[in-house]
Amino acid sequence: MGEFYGVHEEVSGYRADCVNVAPVAVFVNAFFEERVEQLFELASVVERAFSSAGIEYRVIGGLAAYLYVEESQPDAGRLTRDIDIVVRRADLAAIAGAVEPFGLKYRHVAGVDMLIQSGQPARRAVHMIFSGEKVREEYSEPVPDLGTPRIIKGVRLCPVEDLIRMKLISFRLKDQMHLKDLDEAGVINPQIEEGLSPVQRERLAAVRAAR
Image 1 (tube, rainbow, N blue to C red):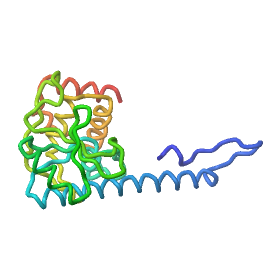
Image 2: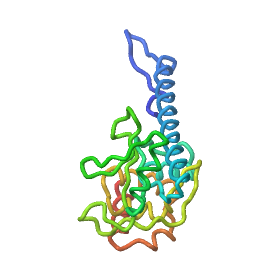
Image 3: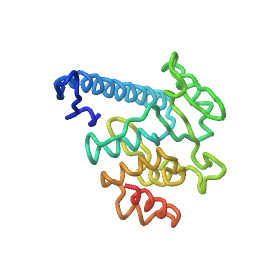
Image 4: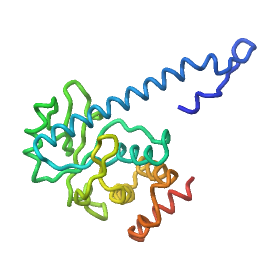
């Protein structure tokens, strides 16, 4: 959003300052706030559904990174478009039944287990991965167990050290951007770094070198 502030352009020989850009900035702010509200509403639905059935889960991925960054450095978080959670595979049948009264449907699409809201595309779904299993065969480690949750804004997050390790294992471009945000917000502390493997430390160093 920041690129809209202080921007100016030449129009018919005169300069249009941020007065003319302001409506665009307001639109972007409103869009951002709407998307955040939608994400948190979906996260709330997940929490109610799982809690009603006594099923454990943890939020990971972009939403977890966003909340950990926002807690440490408000307004520095990077918005995500979906929700990723870790569950136990043994709970899958119970999850499918528990979410239906809350307007969610379990689907297995293209190798991905997800919970979809009626009328919403798969990219806005709740994507599930399983503790103790590798997301991809080439990954060096399986997904950690659920661990003790951290609650931020009512969202049940995985421990931050687990989130950072998972980001360093998958290490896609978006993972590197989340790691950059977490590091710049001071979330990746020396204690967390000590628990990383040599390969993970090398990858963290690469993220820092790319700033």
